[in-house]
Image (cartoon, rainbow, N blue to C red; front, side):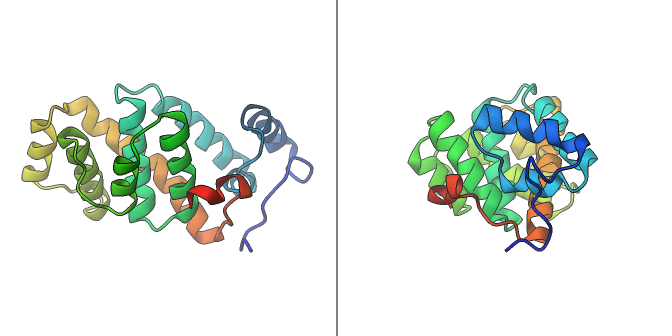
Length: 180
């Protein structure tokens, strides 16, 4: 049971209702995370706006999911781990080997994606104060300064979701349980 209310389309404030309706229309259900974020309509708006911005970065969809799954696992957010596992497997058709390695914080067989996952972990662990060697390893894998900031963006988006779920103890929707 969630420690914070999970707003529904019916119970949400006018400011959040239309956003939740749009999610249900596009996804077929309202993820409980969004119901929790709807307690603060500006937080729900922030999530949706920043998600759209994050989707426009130069990182590929698979790279963005590496950041999201890595962050969710490191931050202990089972809800986001399940949700992003579903995206990785079903929407992006990422390999089972890759997804399972991400879910268990294991080395990835793809060197570039592995460097991305390691850099994401370093950002989280050091609160952005990565070492010169960690930054150099990320860039040596083929990433540039733009990508450095884009990873920070992805981690910040994940933090909003992971921390909200961790505070609320958000239950995983039935639609996501198979990916938990």
